[in-house]
Image (cartoon, rainbow, N blue to C red; front, top):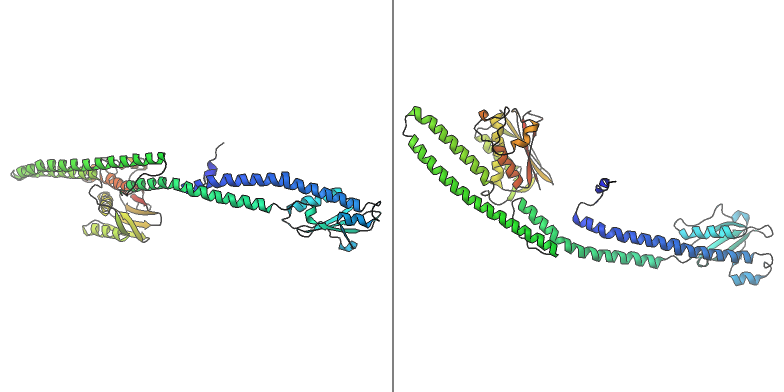
Length: 432
């Protein structure tokens, strides 16, 4: 037996689940206490008192005592005049008077000649009795003699103090949960490329997790700095001999120089592409509020001015999103260049909602088979026959760079088939 169906109705957040853990036992305990008290005590006492009233009514109407007015006076019973037309068609009580059910049932079972009972309010009870040796009789007595007083004080105290203690416990638990939410926010911000101030606090276990996160963040930042320094050195060391080769080749004859220059250009492009991928977002600056879709329109216009057949097809939603503009521009330009390389036209659309930003690039090229889309996002992967090396000068890093930039923004790059153009559809989806 599983409880997967119950998960759909459970709170998603930590505070909601904590409140449920606190409130559910308190409510269950109060319900159990209320039911036990009402059934075992309140209902039992009411039934006992109603039986005693039934005995008193039977005594007052007994033929041996009916001629003695002192008996009714001693029992504090009022005999009122009545007629058969005044008898109600059925027993009467207020719908919420649950103790009245016990009173009526007990009187009906124990009063000889019982006809009807009318529980007017919390203070008065009318009982109609018809015996063979007596005329129709209407008896009135005080309600408190037939049923126990409603336990309002107990129920009110139980609810009030239960709610008060639950509130106090929730406030204390919220203080214990706040460091966890702060740690989650710091980790999420770091995953999106933002470094927010964070200091461990709370319980010992939460502090240990916070210190572990700070150590991990420091190690990652040191690794990024070391990689950036290493790449800077590699870039300088590789470009220097290439420059010397280019100068040496320029002195050769044309028929010998041109093939060598093409090889040098290819080597330069390979180095630039590799460094661009390895560098990632190290030199892309801090995230900043970016107007959407104005930013996308600017990128598309810049690509169009350079001769790329691209248009902004659709833009829905207005607002700002925290983006590393240089990195995101690089990702979009890579996807547009990829679409240009394998197709004749490219369309860009952007959709901004309260929860996410989606940037879609579509082309009319051959597309990518569904079983090869995961492999296409890995670096240095060239797909054949749809998108192979002969189709362009790429080295298999365009999609990998775009996917890496999307992940750095806390998003994802998804590949699919374009419904409108028939080629590849690339979606950059970033949660807001």
